[in-house]
Amino acid sequence: MRHALEMHDTKPLRIGFIGSGFIARFHLQAFLGVRDAKISAVFSPTPSHREALAAEASKMGLGPCTPHPSVESMLRSGEVDAIWILGPNSTRLAHMRAIHREVKAGRASLLGVACEKPLARNLSEAREMLRLAEDANLNHGYLENQLFSTAVRRGREIIWRRAAPIAGRPYLARASEEHSGPHAPWFWRGEEQGGGVLSDMMCHSVEVARYLLTEPGRSRETLRLLSANATIASLKWTRPEYAAQLKEATGADYTRRPAEDFARGTLTLEDEAGRRLIIEATTSWSYVGPGLRIQLELLGPEYAMEYSTLNTGLKVFLSRNVRGKAGEDLVEKQNAEQGLMPVLEDEAATYGYTLEDRHMVASFLRGEPPEETFRDGVAVVEMLMALYRSAETGRTIALPDGELEDYVPAVARGEYRG
Image (cartoon, rainbow, N blue to C red; front, side, top):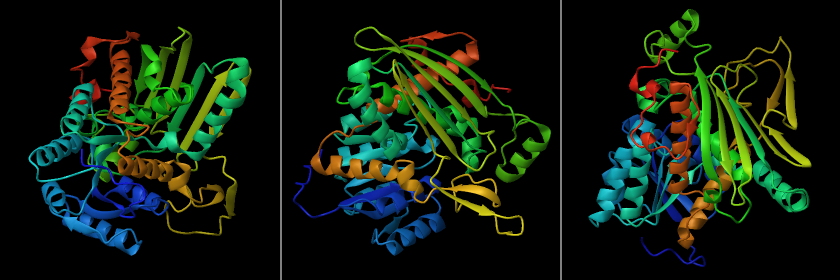
């Protein structure tokens, strides 16, 4: 690993983005609230996309940012200290291999690499992502934004400081995330994304729940995974009228190769004292409401914590006479432009992206492992694969399970029929 910068050194961490889509732009907004960092480079396979994101980063005062025609060009430029892997799931392992190859050959020098959720499409790929990062002696961070939501962190701190020492540790965490469907076409294709909504969104739910159940200051590995049980279904997007809409919009044909748009999972764990803990998670692409809805609960013997992103302090009402263009200017995945509408005044901060990026930058500059590393990313993928296998086999999966090592979900194999 390249020697980390001293914190009194004023040189910012120069970050290169791999990817220029929806999530990359969320990170751009987040970096407005991050010190000691700049977005110096971007690679996207589409020239117009990388040029547009580079121009946007520079305009926002986060650059100057240079677009690059390849990952190798960006790594060899001498303009980057760390890489944020933000491209489609199907490309992440290839990008990590390129990073590993350039660093091992001495053609690139990096302080760290961070990767968006999920770390990979299956457990085999996830373990290879971790192996490559460690073999290249790179500090690595797993970008799971919900752990860094200000509400999540504040609620967890209060529960574990005020309630748990008196009444006992929390034992049940519930997490749900729902919206009306992804933005980019590749999300809808099981072989590219690695699955459907369970892969796309339950990666958030299981990890934020595991985080809430973990005593502050302790590793999440202190919680041992015992079993997984899940159900998946395609409730909306295989209906003929919606399948036709989806095919026209994305090219994905859900009459032939659907992915699940609903998933329910239950994970059983135990702590170091052998006490049983439960995670309940629900996700869907078939929720039609004001927009993206994230709901979290943490329950213990004499207390409870709850949070919903749609219970906002700011709301606006627009009558039926106010007719404007459709968009997402009030909340992510917005489904209406009229009526009483919740407004998230700073989505990047509310969803945790700002604190997440701030933490990763500080960790890389200090040369310290972040709170979430690729090891956590591997643990998340193991939970997802156990849930997929449970749904496919119709039974509860006891863990550890060696069959998960090479398992690919039926959705990703093209064998799921809804």
